[in-house]
Length: 110
Length: 112
Image 1 (cartoon, helix red, strand yellow):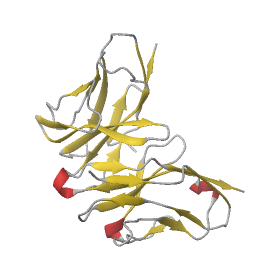
Image 2 (image 1 turned 90 degrees about the vertical axis):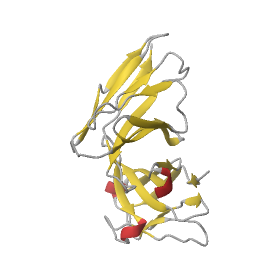
Image 3 (image 1 turned 30 degrees about the horizontal axis):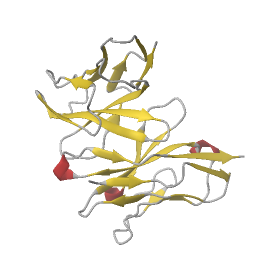
Image 4 (image 1 turned 180 degrees about the horizontal axis):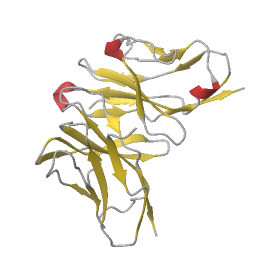
């Protein structure tokens, strides 16, 4: 069965510092990878997906199939980036249901 | 926001009681999902439905039941068999063939 691991439960950085959230997955085929974000008092929402290869709110993520990783990065963190971030994996053959990692809480200090 | 709604925002359950959480979407999505969110455990899939009148168990279906009689609606019943129901429940929907899901605001279930 597929699995998603986010090793850091909490990341605390200062404003303007780089931030990297780690995500590793286990699946032998070709999954679709996502990052979802949940800001305080807001619903869970899509941040970015690997197939779109775009930067959203300054965040990027590269799928590394060799290392089975999909780390999320931002070169200069802002206070409004403080949120809960979830990495997720979807498999088309399994109805596109999402398997989520445990989440990483990011706290950006002023 | 909008598009996918959940009610109520808070729900209290007594011992031995079944309770039903509502999820409605007007996005014309075929697929709908129910997740349970617990601190430190991320989101775990309870049930999902890819089309009307059809649904499948997710990873933690025991103690829960669903129905999908209408495309717009996917209610979740937490039965008395669910011994640890206190959690935040999230409903989501997606278009066919995509992994991008849209989430509702959630229902927090508490046990009295």
